[in-house]
Length: 426
Ligand SMILES: [Zn+2]
Image (cartoon, rainbow, N blue to C red):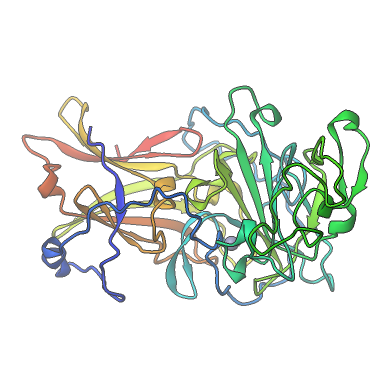
């Protein structure tokens, strides 16, 4: 197996567009080596949506979940532990309206890597009323709120993040053996920091109004631009010792969906695994209860020197905010371009792990380098009104790493969804 890392081709000029003719041109590019992105810096905004599409239409009532189609292939569910509840419903009933999924998207016509999912509020109710729920038991890791939402703990976030809460969920809050998760809630409406409904571990069933400024640097004594939003380590703002931090239980309302930093009312929701930095963002669908049934199709085609892998997921057509079901989302963990012999044994493979793209210095760059093979990710036909979600991955330079068929070998594309279900082109 080839074990290769992804790197961004940061040297590519803006507007560079690979084409069939460009295949040889690309081969002549002086590809950068893998960049050192392991500095833990949360250089992304956490959202990466400086602008948003136009105001969506008012939302219809949530539909009941569609019946599974008995004609679909029957994947064997595995892997997923749906520890969380949906932040918008507070239950395991899926929010079926998702404007933008995790991963590649078009934003105002340009390629963009989306580190989370966008869940709209009801914009036709004359204000901000839709609650945001804690997705699991936990405590507040950090807060960014107006008038200084992006200082201190959120200093690496752009203005588009708006008001933010980051919850920390320890393994004990999830399932045995779980990794610590961080759930991020962006674009929130104004938060009531002086009377935040929370609980303490010694009386966990009682909700009390907590002045978060006592436990966090949120404008009380000692708050600076550097520490704003962080926990106070030892003493409350009053000087009394901190013996326990406020907690929330799964389903507790923690905020209201707003439009701070955004152009429409929605919750940008992210899950980060083991660390709160943007490099640890994962596809939230891996953790949120959903119908674990894939409807993907995959194909491979050759155009000149380019091998194109196309993964398509059917989805309901319609305008922005139209109802989709979760099997229509980007339910892809990785795709593997494999060489198989006549016995269908895998001889060699090139694997693209989508969550690793978010770890790159510039995940918004669609042209990537996977160990010397140039990759172009294109969601070019995807928008909320298209009848399918498509991920096209163009591979150029497979010959340079020896990943070319000989003696009856064939290419096979194997796609693995977030719960470990696999399907292939044959
Ligand atoms: Zn978003």
